[in-house]
Length: 348
Image 1 (cartoon, one colour):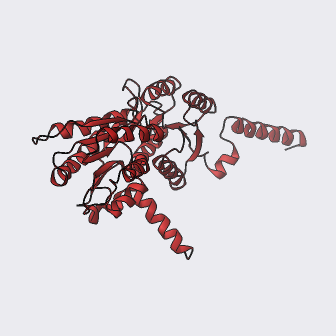
Image 2 (cartoon, one colour):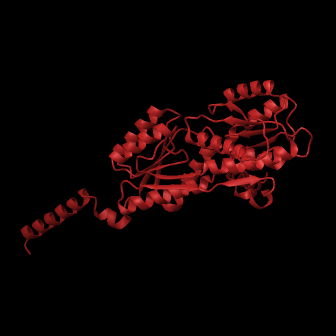
Image 3 (cartoon, rainbow, N blue to C red):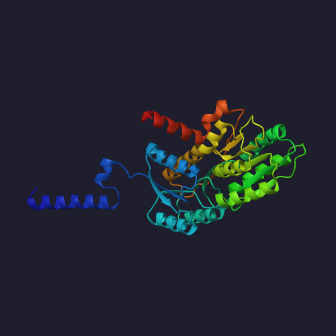
């Protein structure tokens, strides 16, 4: 082959290589493998331990399952989350896990992802309606609220018969708060025993509002026999308020107010160990995150831009009666155990 022919062959080979590279199938991809799947986590902040735990679980799964995780924190701003999701879609993200501010904003975000053919999963806070296509995997909040209240009412009748029960109600724009309140009320209504009317105290998921309204409720009703909190993050408020009224006593002591709630955080775990809390409805957060991520990855790999799956996961009702066997299944106790192991490893 003469020099001109060699040069022509080389240029032809070079052109082929450039064409392969421009089409995303270059020689470098043959040697290094395909680009990792990119999944975004768009959320509203770290205001409670549950959101921190879910974020940490996503980070762990990204390492274990080999996908690239991109995190956007909207800091409880619905408009900012919408802008974040638009930016992620424009960047070519493969899938999005959303922790929306509320059920209404979730509906709009699902619709946006559906229009742009980006697979989406909704974490923990379900949408206000099921018109869109998304992967939903949340703990059955109604079920754990009802089961927890069933246990608490039995304790109320045993220890404080004739005294009313009080519920700290969450923000009723949140589907979770609605379901927890419904489970509480249905559990009371199902009892054949005569119970005083329940006292409902609004919190709007705000500790300051909760403190003010609980104080006012106890001033009007000083003989409360049971308190159910729609979220464990309000336990510090409950402790301060009951202590100020001389009503903060563990099980076995005279004057103990039967106490329980929903979530399963570290404070609930500690207060159950100390005997102040009688029962906790535990969200299975690790299962929620894992279910959504695995379904999202499967949809991306099979080329399904609008996966649609609705799972309601059975939670745990941890009580003083089953603590011996089930204590370690509460995510808050998982965190406490991990911290204890870390301190031992550091020689503390």
